[in-house]
Image 1: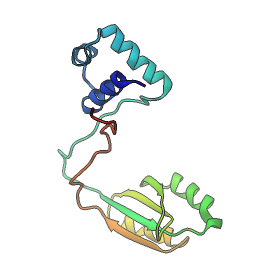
Image 2: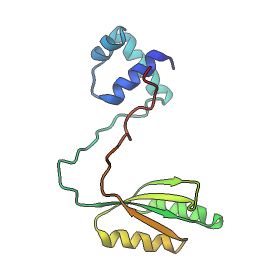
Image 3: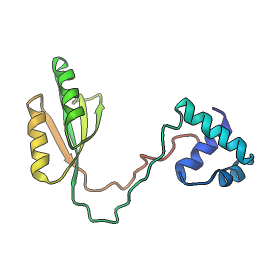
Length: 147
């Protein structure tokens, strides 16, 4: 992947609906050349897909939370299977520190969150933080150097 590919990725990361023609103008290539580069990056897996990011136009009617949990090594496979199949789990991170995993959940209400916490507590000590807002959200930004 060269500098032009990185520029194309940054442009697509900023606006996934940008046309090939617009990208070509910004990176000083022809449209067919940009199309070929994008196709190659898609084929190699550098570009894994395109998505829509929903805004907060609707009032938030759910609870997002982070549940940190210490899982014994003997229970790790069971835990991972459980969270993979558990409705409400959006992400699971294997981490260093005082807990072994952090699980991000989206629950319809506080009762659903309490149910998940209780279920996780059967496998280890937990600590839960309810997410109030996300002042910085770079989930979809492209982490390539800007130069």
